[in-house]
Amino acid sequence: MADLSTTWELELLEQFSGLTAATDEETAADVSFESSDHNTCLLHLSDEVLLLILRYLEPMSLLRLGSTCSILFRVCSCNSLWTRHFQDSFGVSLSHTDARCPVTSKTAFRLVFMWRSLFRNIHCNRALQEKLFVEIPLAPHPYWIQWLVLEESVPLPSVTLPCEDVENLWGITRDLFQDKIQEKTEDCETLKFEWRELYHLTLKHHSSLTLVFQHVLDQHQNNDHSELESMYHQYIQCRFQWLFTYWLFRQPAPYNKQLRSIFLQWKKHSKSKVATWGETLCDVRYLASLHPITSDYWRGRLARGDESFGIQTVENYFSMCKSLVSWILGRDWGRLKRRKIYEDTLEGVYLLLRRETQEKVIEHERFWEVAKVQMTRVCTLEATAVNYVNWKMIETLPYYKLYLISGNSVYLNHVQGFLCRKRLIRDWIHLEENTWARQLLPEQLYTLLEFDTKISQESLHGDSPTAQLSRLMWLYLNSGQEIYLQAVKGMVLECAHASLSHLGTLAAFELSVASPHLIA
Image (cartoon, rainbow, N blue to C red; front, side, top):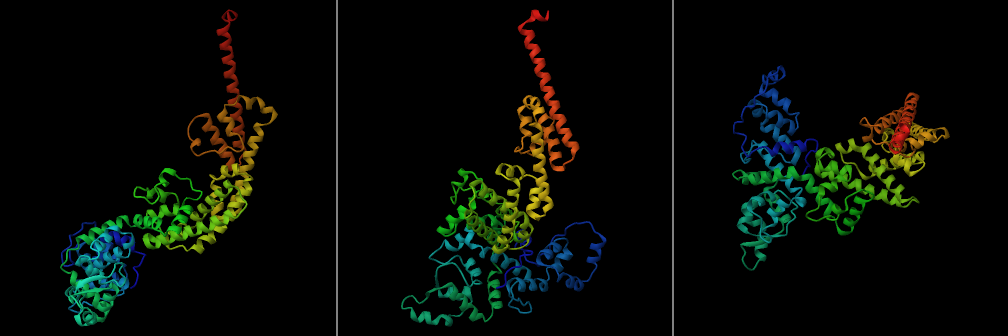
């Protein structure tokens, strides 16, 4: 059976969630909109010409265009358009020249699309599992069996049914399972079947998959599908969360322990929130936020919003993380260096592949290929910083991330220049001639002038002396212009003189209080 096209599926899900069970014969309400020349020209075309144009639209665009007005709704609901989409999506051609076809192609597409979307994710869909498994060892409700007729592989144990139900639900004749009846010595009217066995008997009886689909749609033509629609609406709202939770907590025991270790390796996290890993009250949204790629999946931003393909990207990402951890642990590095190389490499990989992950599945080999390049660049930045303290100081620089992404030596030179200028400021304040200023400066200002002090973005705002000095230093460190260095020096000396004047005034005041007769 052909897979659904992932290029339009996300939006198509949203569109179908809002559709009611109304048939295409019911008149759609007119939607008021401002007429433009373009719209007027489109509406003036004949139905035949419109159909030729609409053949090039995918289902999503067809639905959106059909929602604009009653005229386009009628044309966009044409059987010939939806028959083609049914063929492309499910590998079955519905023939409406045949009297046996019970519903329009659009209605057929809508119903089968909802069912298939639910069924392919049954492993993480608790609501559908309860519908299909609640009656074990008895069969599910006939409504759900009528949909299961379409599926060759059904994750249910063998089913015991009356022969009459088998004939009615699957549409097969008793002669096809006559051997089973003859083998049964008691109660020949109730037989045990495997689901796969029933599927193949159905296909044999109807002679083609198309006729099997038509049989199922015929069974459903008078059914109420509100429960299917309700479950489908819940699914499109929660599909990323469901599948991510299933993937994170339902792995085999050895791999589950390994996945947890890799997921939390060198990641800053709340121990209290992680303590409930896999439990009912576990904060799965928080766990997803620990990695940017899992955060993107949680919000439906991977592989064009396809949850199944998106989770493949997540799996391949953590496979790469496993290889990366093994490689780093095999090196004679300290704990802090290992952690920072791991974190910065993963950040570089994400920055470089973010757009690719939004469009398609990224294989493990692709991740690892990019990771090796990123690790080399991270190690180059570490060597440039000389030590861990300096390394942490430069990580917020825009040139740091630009070098990670591009590998352009120009950005590395900017990082080196930043460090040289920071050293220059530190050496200046430590000159012997500036000893007096160093001793008079407030602690927060003196700390800023030290070589290993990181200037945070938050400290650049405000009118305080610390904010003003931070801005001047930031301008000099990132531009290298001498005018800003002179401004830094001038402000430092001005602050030192202000402190000296303040101390002199304070000393005079204390003296006047202690010896008022001297003043007199």
